[in-house]
Length: 423
Image (cartoon, rainbow, N blue to C red; front, side, top):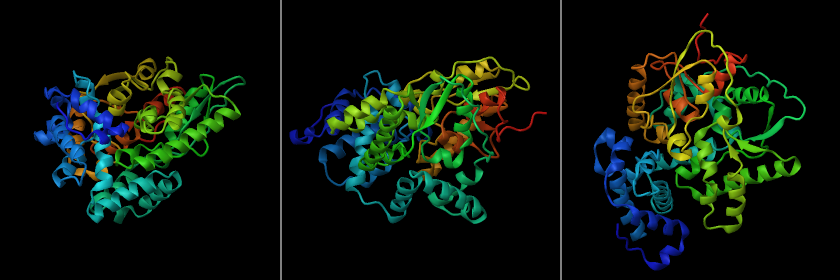
């Protein structure tokens, strides 16, 4: 594509990178087949190619965005299936992130939308407030779950989250490897049993998890809302927490058990493209990010019976981290019959806060995903991202469980709360 940015605009490293990606796009349309909103809606404006045209016009103009542009950029899930498919190497993530910052700083949304976005960024990104919000939603579930809009959607997510009493990790022997654990914000409130399962699995492999005190939220929610400066503040907090912990007693790696957060952590250096000092620190931190699959070598085990598990690979894993699987090899080694889901490249509709802000499209994608899962006749679905877990869970779905919970179960841990008693 030809671009027409003013030369002074390209002094901004984020705009300069967006311009390079715009110039790389040849409008071939290969991306459209991998775009969930285009597959669902058939509207060119809801395809990567159509959005690229609108984002280019908006960024080059530099002024207040048109309502139509905001509407269609908002409907992008940031699943990044288009990035994986693009033969020209267009990094769509850089374009849409810059576009969202532009919209956030120059467009005034209706008050209800501002309130919902502020709640997501200011409450859900703070672990203590997120925990309090989940508890309140559960207490007020008979009323809260019937509320319209974003508040009702958040209450329904909190109310349907399975509860499971915690259990201490298996003590690691002396000389165990040390891995720092970033617990995040929403997952400890909705599903604390996931990290407890991870800790027990790694303890059996002579690895002890060291929580990163004071790290808090990774900033992914704020970043996806176009609140880049808020995302930077949260990223700095996580990086500083790691540096303090590593200074006290060196760790081998940093782990987080939600792939959506892990993808954002690996992208920290780009977040600080305009700040060389913090970019260096962010790069050192990102280089330490590991994942469950790398830390936990597969082990043979025996489920109560041969269970068939559908593996739901989150978009953050496929197109963000570009990793073959989080816990998939461990599930197979543990005796589960693991199968892929048809149309596995299409997003389930969770996409961070997307299911809250764009519930109609999110629910349509959820129904499509569950329809494909129903073709497989499985005992449960495994997915390593808290957003996918909460979005897909429901009375109309099979048990939706984090892979770590299943692996821990067959290695001697507690049965996952979502898994029916098989006895």
